[in-house]
Image (cartoon, rainbow, N blue to C red; front, side, top):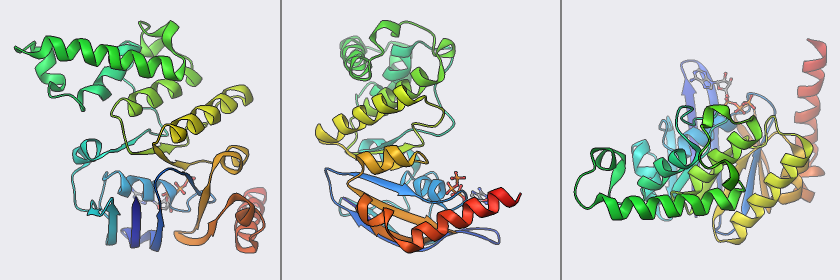
Length: 256
Ligand SMILES: Nc1ncnc2c1ncn2[C@@H]1O[C@H](COP(=O)(O)OP(=O)(O)OP(=O)(O)O)[C@@H](O)[C@H]1O
């Protein structure tokens, strides 16, 4: 499904990713982990075409995507959530999800806003579909609430519903459990597994190791921009390079 080939990304003198290669098949939950500054967000930003790699190739379902514009990703089947939430606070829950949905319909947000002929039927179907995803994440009781009034846990579910509304083949989740309590994290894990079981491949960047180890089929580990390990949760937990990288990060943090 996805192949990252010898990808390097530099920002001025900073090497955020260095000659990173990995690939994975459809139908899995894949985790991307590593200490702070390891290059995880940079990798996600390249896969979702926020910016291109400095070197290397990214191939999605046999198609090179590393030179494509950001807005080509959703129609291709790649959707994502953001660590710093990107919901429209002055729109309702259902309106936010419909923004995601419009990418899938011919109408588009602008045509719908202008109420051009032929948009009405698609609007109804976009609304119904949005409600389906709202139900899926469990926000049905809040569908007409303003996003700005939602607590963090609900906002994360809203971001998830909006990303799902584009009906992605590959869903990228950037720290979707950050700031969630134990119960909310468990519910989020269950949802991610359900999404995978429904046929969407999920790629997660996550600091919550319990979540990563319990739901991922495969894990890729970055440290200081380089890939240092790849394997099943069990293999990663006992990998000496991974343990050293995380312990090193801990020691550094404690010394500050
Ligand atoms: N736009 C940018 N300009 C300059 N340097 C950047 C930029 N984005 C990332 N970096 C640098 O690249 C390196 C990797 O950062 P990145 O955010 O990808 O790491 P991360 O693994 O996602 O970290 P965290 O877990 O803290 O979110 C860091 O040294 C960071 O300071």
